[in-house]
Length: 454
Image (cartoon, rainbow, N blue to C red; front, side, top):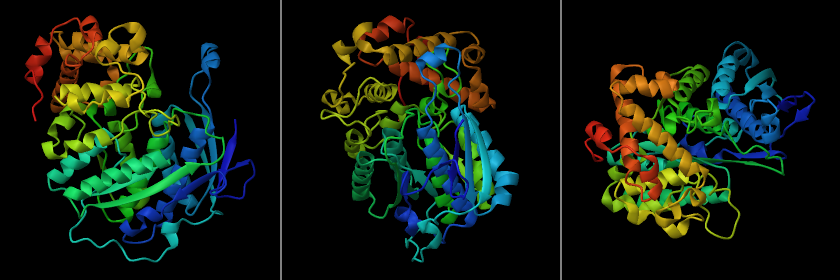
């Protein structure tokens, strides 16, 4: 088990900014009303350390898993902080618990006196961003379809978000900047900020990146606290945020918990504790499907939809052809959502390397495992919803829903969410839908009215 060291004088596997990773925080400096406090700077450094270690430390491979190992890792970070007493007594345990739930790993932190390089936002004297209205939230803007829809709907409702983007490669940065330019054609005064982070060398061994959300959410919370903004908003459809397993043998964070309600609640606890003031984390899209988000985008702004990105690997793809794979669950949910929303005209079949719509998705051999798993899950959900007691039946399949829907209103919203989701699959133009979703839409139609309400 490797012990990693950040910002301290300890030996071991020492990771240094500039040599092993890069971080540029100048892009959000103007959004702050004051320099970062020591504890906020510590949280940002901790999130960077977690992100770098998560990418460097590979999980067990297929042969090791077959031999009985779990995919969980034991990760130890020795980190220099500006307020070691606080992190030893309060902050460290909250961060460890949060990361365990987010990644399935065991995280141990050893806090020492800070001996690193200060952040730009700790030291620089500058004029704060001057706007003629008060910002009401920090909105995480990834350049994905959900975040685009969420931001557009917030602006349509008269909200005033500070759009915060985190750039991990040039393709991601270009997409985010281009979309922000398009948004400003409709709302010239919209405010934005950004930060960039990158790994150096060939040390990126672990593709799952379960801790990446911790970096993004921590950065948003730090900016909110330092800019005196009371809340962070994330924009993720409910099906993606809750992340029910596609297969019965998927456990824990085999499905991502990046924007899960429990993750957001624990981020609220951590950042509020660090900042000494409440910072809320909200997902206004929790009880909506991706298609419902799309159909709510006004007609004149739907031209931005094809410019957004959803593919799991599009930003990191280095081939000469189109970037979207077409067969990952994110690509498939995007395409299903556009067809369900009546926006199939915006689903450019030339922009995916594997086209599973129409004849391309007509048999199991061409469809790939992801589409089959998604349809199998939808079929099991459909059967549960057809039961006389749909909530108990759904809980039998997915007991983790108890942590999501606790009140009667939340249970009703959860049932409606998944009934809508299954109903939407029946609009996906693939013969496999008829083969896997053997039941009719009648039960789901009773719950959702047989259509998507704008």
